[in-house]
Length: 311
Image 1 (cartoon, rainbow, N blue to C red):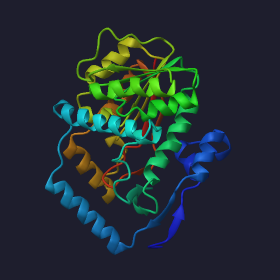
Image 2 (cartoon, helix red, strand yellow; image 1 turned 90 degrees about the horizontal axis):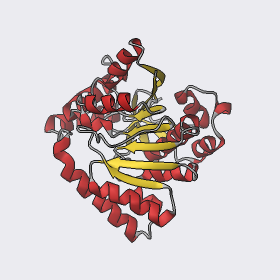
Image 3 (cartoon, rainbow, N blue to C red; image 1 turned 180 degrees about the vertical axis):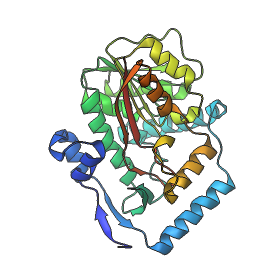
């Protein structure tokens, strides 16, 4: 019914993850139960206005991503560092401000209005906790590429305080922020500069290391080859990615068609999952999980999950 209200439950998250509710880690179930997950389905007129607004915004133009935006990210993470310091080094100050910028979210293939601006971020935190505890509990070390503000690394350090982690980013401000987080909170974190387009040949990965990206590879568009080759050569234990994934969209569904237009207009990650599937067919990797979680922001779904390991 148009305008009907509902909320996401632990069972909803379990279905998105492909597990039973009973198989959710206790911490994940608690986050899902307590989170601000109330939402309202839009009326037909409201939905039309949202779609027209998305079309207007796409036609009005978005800046394309790529290496030319280094300065934007340097500025963004410098501002985050200043906010982190002024807050007394509160980890909440590391949360990206662009998540939840609109009350309209994507949910189960259509639009809805979230009752709380933290809806999307809190849903991501539920997923992140499940992913950490399901996939990364046995790794020796985590390397997050494109770590940004470091808020994922801080969450990992709190979940696994004995494990080391490395935050890698092409913005020096992000690298310095990771080191500052470690110094102020006693986490086993280290920052290091890394360029997706020119991977550091001196960066070694151990056989017990895990690699993660969270909406970071989206910035490289179709130019993910150097990074993927780097991973195939280094052979980490596991690679996990939460990235917008064109292959999951259905062009016969209007919200998905708009997401495709937005994604291509921004020049976001393109062909990565298709390449991984080809590598699996060649026997070079093994895909462990490929999943569209079913929620996202006004313009697209950044929350699709892929996990793989070298064969």
